[in-house]
Image (cartoon, rainbow, N blue to C red):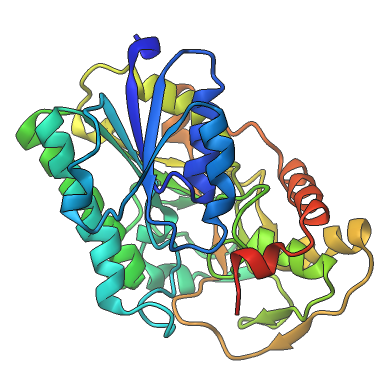
Length: 361
């Protein structure tokens, strides 16, 4: 029964962790929610008071330090939302490659050992960036309605359709150091689950967005763009044709809740049913140019410059196909992109210093 479950959330004061912890605590199912965070991410402290008000028990600890896990209580499930979520991590000068691997892979190993010790289930929140960069970066594109889409003429690579990228698409390198750390975490999680007989699910998420997301362009592009537009900060289309036609899908973390609740109550499933994409999909997909058009209509005019030089690991079109999640879990995204953008804008108006708080220079 979910009402008797004890759930531990890693990275609980991050944007995704705190959103899911609030949703679990407010679900009315009586679950006991606890979690830990190292609070090194600017903005994470702002989520502490609200979680405590909801009865969530918080621990201060670093997922990279095995000894920090020793005071944690035994639980039934771990939801792993702790990660350095930037595709530029390890190469941008902000985080070393060793720190990235220690955090994203070493931290996962520590949590898997915790699950082994307590016989707890494990849900890994993974990423769309485990998919191979080269075939995505070279995919022929055409512009339609201010956004890239796969060109209609050439045959698409296996695992890609007009609905997006499926779980069968290649995960061969290069996927970035960030993507590799998450892909290795996925493999280890599944192996630990099989070897030590505890349930594991890997949820590959598209771009997650919503109010309170930390405002870094490489980690929260929607929050960064809306907050920067509202504050009239400089914005730039980087790479490709310099027109902002690059596309991402958009998913609110709380939309994961129905699938998480089913996974928490699921019987043991075969390995092929343990990995699935969760994303807003093609109906949520939006280009930077279209995002700018929305901002202009709702927040007033603001110029955007262009820079021809691309960023490392960037791709023109990243849209996940979540048909497998629909088939396995009867799951569909619930929050339209426009509602997510309105939520972000409302938060931005209420917190005029959000960029300084969550993404200080």
